[in-house]
Length: 131
Length: 467
Image (cartoon, rainbow over all chains, first blue to last red; front, side, top):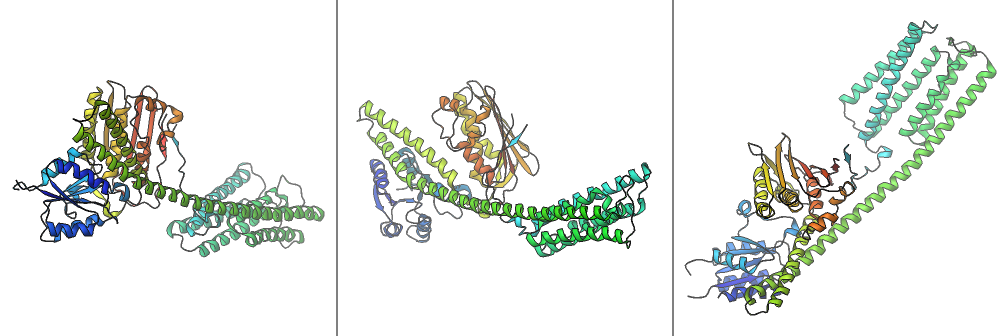
């Protein structure tokens, strides 16, 4: 079985390393980017099987912008995106996937702090089953 | 008895002491109209009783006519105030002056038909001067004072020199042609009127200065308060990431390495995770408490309140079962909907139900009732718990305040739950009520409008304490 590749886009390098330990332990290959721009380039170039995207890097909505760009590129249009959120404090807006799916082009929100169990469950849930 | 708490950040309307708005002047005018009803009816009553009832020898017809004219004029004022909204401050002020001149003339006419200088009610002029000092500034107050002096002096000398008729007041002495008495009385009258105008102007100027200072101070304090909230929001945001990451890190270590670590090491890490979870709870609560600007049109959704309450109660059932608590849920049928911010409403319900479960007695009951009252929705959360001592009933809505009993009962609370409830209820335009007895339990009642629209200036609700 070819190993699945997961791209983590998050500017918190410590969190990236922590998530990497869990995911690599599960047998996934992990690549990462610390900025939205690099993450976008990497996603198009390496076509990962799943993307973990931090909602807010440099700017409040950088994560969303990246998500839109990923969805509009034909390489990554169907790649599952799990969005890591902790924006509740900044904007006062908790995401409601059922209501907001139309304009939020991601598959799932994972609220930080993400527990290893939850992370693995969600990754399994959204990874394409045929691989 | 119900007691409403002071609203600490309710802004004082700037400049209301100077009537910078026509509407604020109109409020004062309406009050004077009420006074005038009393004056006119008083005149009619006294004249009727004295002239008709007691058959006193007074000018009943002329006096009644004057009273009726006052009544008629006041009707015109009231109808005008009712029909036409206040437009410009200048127009309103001019109208006040006209009304005041008419009042002074009518008072003079009344005095003329009831003894002139013989009538001690001449001092009613002072009332007008006082009212003038409430409405006007410096020179305008003096103009009213001088008009009063002119009118009364004219009336008195008119009678003395015979070009005005004298109507004797039966019980008074015959002094209308007693020049030394007239001069003495008028002298005292002039002095009192002018002095009243001077003192009135002085006091009001002083009051305005104090009020201006208060308004300025309050604006400064509100700015500082906002800056502090912004600061807290910033701090909360900055602390969140390191805490979250640390928690994820330790959880990962526990998840992957628990087989290889000693039990004591595992225990240390589990304790650390628990404390970090507590920190996360506080951070989430602080985030709720310090955020602003959520209540925007685009964030409003139609929310099934029945569903929200049911959802919250379902998540609490497990904890309640473990504590041997029964949760009794009463919902309206058909379900009630709100146009509101869903997460805010969820947090309000969750925090109240969570408290009712957490601070209950073993085997106690929690009752959650939702009542549709048309324009409003009432949520009542009742418990059989430890209750809140009266002196602490207002304090529990303060940030980080926890009663001693609550601290004994549980070390899990953040002390922010009720502060958040109070803030959110206020932002959504609702009201909050607490009825609690120590040892018997507490009843929290939240009333929310069916539609939360953006309020002018967000302010917390006054919490009503119902002992």
